[in-house]
Length: 103
Image (cartoon, rainbow, N blue to C red; front, side, top):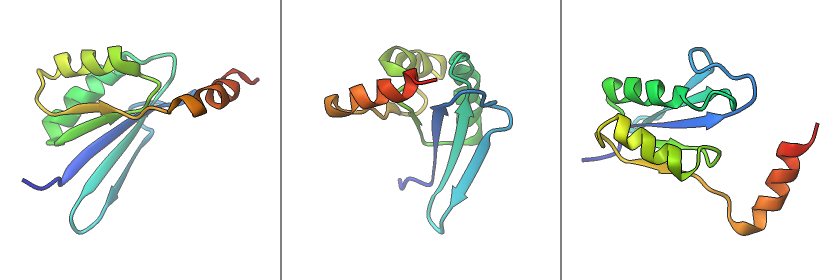
């Protein structure tokens, strides 16, 4: 089975999971991209369930969720589709913390 529909869920200050949604398509694949406010990570559960109902084949979470949220999402959707995460390597951690901690 070919990958036809997948989703990426990311965290960003002030984003609303009900309206900060974008979708891109090619002739072969479509991806839905959804932003969630950094202070409301718990919304990822309802977003993931809805995506599974829509037929996504896999869900990718931004690194800000971490492994605990990946596990919680997998449990919440009963392992219906693969759930993974994007993470920065050790060389990028300090610069990312500097960005996130700046005013």
